[in-house]
Length: 528
Image (cartoon, rainbow, N blue to C red; front, top):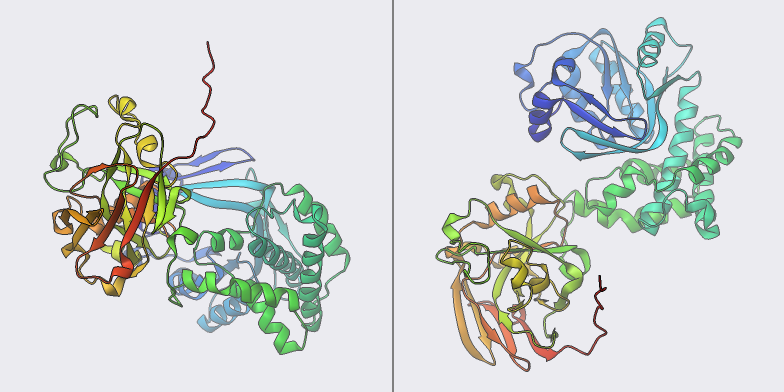
């Protein structure tokens, strides 16, 4: 059951897996029924042998509701979520159907969706599915699942006798590892934790907290299980938990289902959880922002990763023939043309733009669109939901930098993306600009107005630009999309340049002073 772009890819080309165990391509002809989750009423119904819940923990209820029509009297429901809260939820919901039988299940794999239809697997060899009964010995039907999965190349399966206890073992590991990694940052990969005494102590303390809750819950957690996890950490070179990656990328995460559940269960059972609870509280803002459960100002230069600038996006504009491969008009573009500038090249409004010796600078004042939430592959209809606000940006250009190579179709990096070439103004909440397509952008040099551009003359709308940029590269909270300028002109060292929106408070005006770049050691080209 899939939707949107994944549905389109799977319906055409099937599923691809890039794996350390060997790459796999399963063509559409071998996938049987590929169902559209947005039109399930039109799909053929049958009694499934097994329903595998491979969704995130917070999606369990919704996914079970979608799967219910395919659950028969003897259908097994196999959840693979991180955490232990989901099991009670799955058990309760499936029991209420009066058909089907829930199992306990989890998996060990480090993988992610690289793009729709393509899964990248880079750690845990071989990947394994673990499962078993809530109580009692495995039934013949449960054993049948093992016999089927055991025939699959590149993976392992383990039918556990005491599945719930073993699941708590994984839960303690994933919670503790996520607490350390997500809080410490991407450098704290699993193999690093045992190498840094402070991180290992933090990890062990978190483990002991979860183990104490497990034992209070009647789970037989064996102390040796924790020590066996240390070599697993050491061998997981470069590995990070999916919850950590989601938090860092600004996506919905399982924070509530992992660290949050430990925090709550600790309070309920009278078990102190200082490490896990502290990490949970520290990470809560990230998670709530991703879920749109809270609204905060956005600081692009702290939170954003990049600035995407458009080229020739105002009607009537034309690329100069002496500087580009072809004299192309704005009307000829079928989609926005982008250059990507790292946020590290931006400076705050009021700063100094350092001009390299001999470089002729040009000004452009542009409206910047600030992204509110991580997104990719958006449609124009969805795009404006990801606008957190705006800012004014001075798109300063080295007029005689890089154009020699651009004549041959090469990049705009050297003339657009040098350090200090992108002064960024204060964040403007979206509510301040209800009609961003009807603005007048003012540029002033040394107090004199040199341009008055109108956003209504943009070739591509803001929604079209966001949709196209999100297809080109994943967008993150704080990223800025420049909407282009209709005018540009010369600047010299000593000039003071400003960009403003007509009628808007001066606190949102962006400004910069051009100064000579300090002397630096130049790159010495090797002689052939």
